[in-house]
Image (cartoon, rainbow, N blue to C red):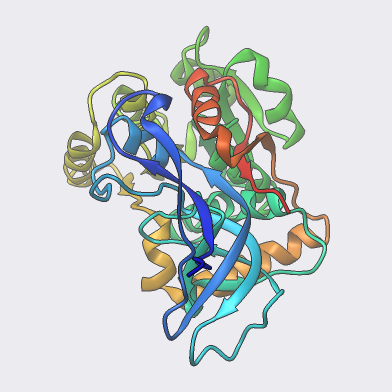
Length: 343
């Protein structure tokens, strides 16, 4: 009897190490369960979380082997029983709270699937999903920014960094960003004042740029010593928000426990400053589903209207996921690295 089972490709992370720890395998095509949607993935992103999982430095990584990837854009391919709000062939975007998006097909609960306007470039759309949702929540919920406030963004040329700058410009903030000299032109496109973290002391430079007043908000994706030194440049009432630990991916120690302790201890200081720890955006797609659906829908409409333009650093076929991770490791990329599937 002929075997009519359909198959698809997905990335798996089986061990810890360099990009060679990633493989692309073939597996039977999953069927959507009741309440689920099967999506044909057109584009899926690579994030710092994926790299940290590969390096064995992500605190909540799933048990290996697993398929990495949090975000995707594609079209509805099949509907499980009870799904009524979507149609086969409809363009959609989604976050997967527990990874799994780096594949040709995925099954996702309907509540996590957000329709998107027709005609969007899937690579641009997926560059909005995780990065811009994170940036939006950091600015408007965690930091509660107000027009005219001064905001310093560390690692400002990355996917979330550029999203913070673009949404920060829309929010009428005074922006500063740390990045290597080669990426300063990108920061300037968003109206941000660039600071070369390799050749300049960002603490001294912020002091010069603000006449010693400091900033209202620091967005810290680096952790470690950068977090500690950033506290000193906050004005009274300022907010220091830790949302990553890039220093660990560069060979440094895993700083999450230390950062959490610092966040708590710094809160005890009677100096009018605040420290906050931002967790992971993907679980919020479930825990704050109304916010997720409303905000992602609005961001996709802004993309369609040309009011925001995410930076796509590179596009790779799914089969070249190891090369995509190698590029991420080089720290030479601007914006988002995207895996694309053939139509």
